[in-house]
Amino acid sequence: MSTIQVSVPATTANLGPGFDCLGAAWTLHNDFRFTRLADGETLQIEAKGEGADKLTTDETNFVYQSFSKLFAHLKQPVPPVRIEIDAAIPLSRGLGSSATAIVGGLVGANAFVGEPLSREAIAALATEIEGHPDNVVPALMGGCRLAASGIDQDWEICELPWHEDIIPILAIPDFTLSTEKARQVLPESYSRADAIFSASHLGLLVRALDTGRVDWLRAALQDRIHEPYRTQLISGRDVVQRAAIAAGAHGVVISGAGPTLLALGTENKARAIADVMAHAWKSCGTAAQAHVLAINNAGTVSQTL
Image (cartoon, rainbow, N blue to C red; front, side, top):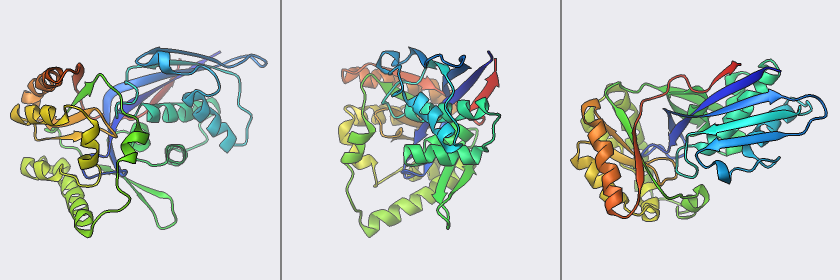
């Protein structure tokens, strides 16, 4: 029987002041293959790559749960399926690995039944599963995306231009940080001053990403909603950030809930920034991978093999 292959990009959510509403997709991805089995056969799941040994291979697998969610939404029985996972995105590092599972499962299931759901409908289902849109929306649709709740509680999704001179550099340390733990350190409420700071800097960030204005970008990446509280959970963050800035980065923010750090820089300095970030983490006793990436404007791509 034919196989559906789905490729879903890594993402960075919470870009600076864009907490729970802004995210971008990168040129690093997880691949999922879905093959329909004969009636009467049982679920098969095989995983390889980053974190494969930590993934379940039964009905609790997150890809399969999302795959099943779409059939439940359509009020159709879940067909017997073989799922192959080829992961390149590290787990629990703030790069949207769970979002790739959600989006991959939904898009794979949608392809199984002739794609009755639009991308907007899949985005709504993915957000319902994830709880917020800032990872799943760019993972599905690509690019840099801002999501806001509409008047009727649906999501309004806006694509934001990303200037070609702004290069993303991701430094991924060899330790994990759960989203739940990262949320637990956040306060229940914020001051009026912090709310104004967040709104003004998010507005400035949107313009900085569009125009490539470095002075705007440096100022816009500041945050008071999540970064000051989560920094304490990321050992070596200040050392790595100072090294990146010294090497020419415009700024450094936490990718998602962390611990991965995202630096933004120019093409001619990107490799040097990546190298010093990895070295700085090593000086703190932590091994790290550093990648010079690019915006993935295609988002999730599926094909029949």
